[in-house]
Length: 107
Image (spheres, rainbow, N blue to C red):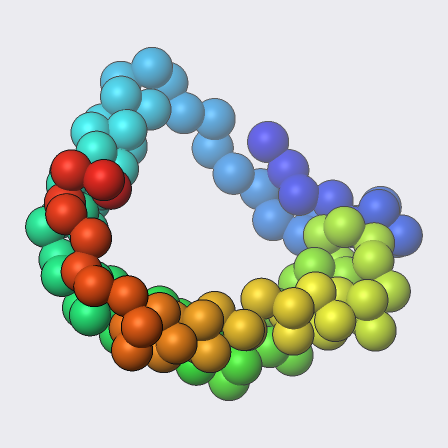
């Protein structure tokens, strides 16, 4: 499988096609990660979301270039897309201050 720049036709990267066993193993990892996430307190999850927003902001130009290269979006639009994601930080801080922890069963 290949990721191809739609504007130039250039191959950006090639990926191996996974077999059923590899997909099953990856899904088990996802299930395990979700269980770990659900066990975290709301404050811990909020802190992690805050960190994610910080990383997105710090690497926004890198991600915007990747979006442009892989999807053919204008760089200006790709930057706006990244900016639209970073309110995660504000939402996570506001939520942490105003909401009680959610039971793990909800997640």
